[in-house]
Image (cartoon, rainbow, N blue to C red):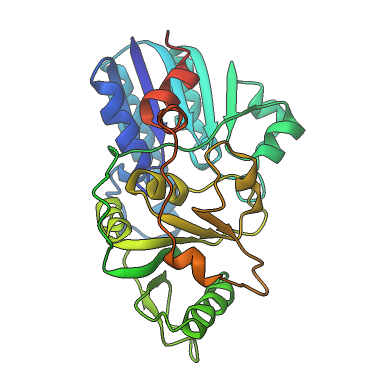
Amino acid sequence: MKILLVCKDIGGYAGKLADYLMTEHDVCFIDTSSLSNRFDRAPKILRRPLKRWAQLRQFKKVLGKAARFDVALIINPAQIDPKQLAAGLNVADRKIAYLYDSFSRWPMTREALAGYDEVFSFDPGNAESYGLKKHYNFIYEDYVADGAPGDYSAFVVMAGKDRVPALEGLAREFDRLGVTDYKFLVQCKPIPGAHPGITFFEQRMSLESVGELVKRSRIILDIAKPGQAGLSFRFFEAMASRKKVITTNRSVVDYDFYNPANILVIDEANPVIPERFITDPYVDVPETIYQKYTLQGWVKTVFAFA
């Protein structure tokens, strides 16, 4: 099958999906965030239109090598330049969209959604309101069952300052329990007076670097963005590495892999962590459920492979 996969792949997750698909299919993967920008030194008034023109030309050049595709999968189409998006959809017989952000962050009109044969959304509320197919993110690495205790009691990496107050509340709760070997990373400028256990940094971390820190930690923190109900990749990274999760996302209780022994849902305004949650062992997710969330299971659902 000839597959066109288009995504602004800042996190690197779509690249993992593309690599998996390439093992059995002819895949053209276009990461729009990596398209060249040769006009970054042009006068400001010309910079944006020249950049869009050059990137559209590059986009079409890549498409031209394949001529036509059996299916196009567009991830978060609201993040794709409209002309690039139209060019991609025009060369595909079947059109699929997957949304791994909520409409509160990247809205789409019903008219835009109607341009796809199928639309999957990780947000259960959006799926129900717009008549979309509810789906979820995926485990992008092989199962790691080494049971290593890890270097850090808890780990989180996130971008932006909006969720720092919630993270500070969790830091104080860990401090109360006498647990201080945690690693909390926030990608933004340092916030004066923030909890000393939080480290601020500027350059985005690679997916591989994050994955290594997940494996070296015993608990993964997940602080949902405002308006978010769908599950972030943190849950699937944790499942693959047999790590527990502390989260503010209450919708996780509706998923079949949820186990209160592994996943603690907290009140963002008043986080309480029972000591037993930290000390009790991880409980393995049943293999049949685990496989559902692997790339193999995800691809089978989206592309309807037999």
